[in-house]
Length: 204
Image 1 (cartoon, rainbow, N blue to C red):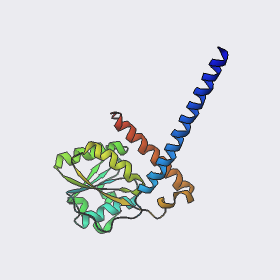
Image 2 (cartoon, one colour):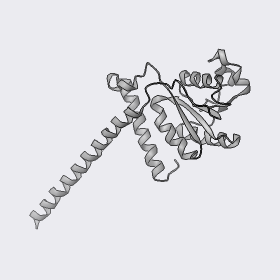
Image 3 (cartoon, rainbow, N blue to C red):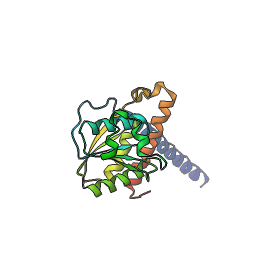
Image 4 (cartoon, one colour):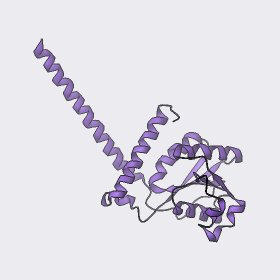
């Protein structure tokens, strides 16, 4: 009896170890695939859309979005995730060449605190204005998760990705820089969490 129990324990231990190995292997295979999906270049030509949304997180994102608005790629711009104390004038000063656009064509979202919030506030803005297509501006490494969240709340809207590539964050060679590797790995974990949360039907 004891020998049978030990044999079963040994078998179960092997199964458990095999399961852990498969999970770990799957995690890193998925991570590698995730790094391959990160856009490495900003689009040279991009289709027009009804509007543009930029998810805050750096001046380069804002600059890219305002340039698209100035070029007529969208009729209106939402800057999502703006700090509650930041004014429209303060943001306009970051892009002086296009500062006049902030008086006519730019809306600020100060409610969103994360990517889930960005998506929720963007959905409200889109519904209010009855837009049918949207250019999404964010950093290249953040784009996969952003699109997952936005597609969840805007399934009928045509989303056009405009990834912002920053030379100081070489996502294509993430393994050569510790900070970049940590950033990309962190984003991958958040991306997985978002996929799992949405697949399980959870909102938060």
